Length: 208
Image (cartoon, rainbow, N blue to C red; front, side, top):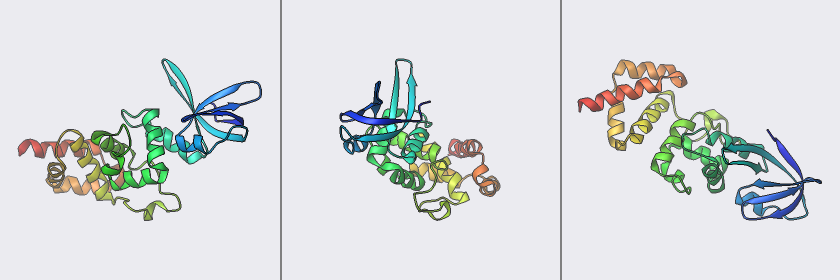
């Protein structure tokens, strides 16, 4: 992996920077805010991550480690590739993305080009406990942090809506889960078996 590149900016386009390393010029894909902050002739160090595809090898560059980390984390979500990951960073930035995911804010996420309702639900479901706290705030105090009960309930509800049920139907199904099973999931906290809870909620919908 190429962890960083350091050299002189040779050329800047809308989403790409060419860095002169002395004997070779390296083309690095960047978000528009990063590219616009750079000028030809100035020295730069970009933290990088290499994305390998069957038909291409693309080096993505960032001015700070936090952006690179979020870029890599977002791509672990089903159906999210580097183009959409970069769009998330350009539109929201790391902290607003964390806030939107923690709060289950589908509206904020769907403002990002390439993210529809189902994509927003997948981001919330798969990243809720993985992006970390908003900068400057401990995890326990950041807005939107779910309690143990809210955590599994939100995940199960998001799973149901991604399967086509309405938000109201999903909420009613979660409420209808056996009380003992729900209490056990709350006690388990982050270790709750979301798959089992989703199946239990689906069983309540089958009975309705």
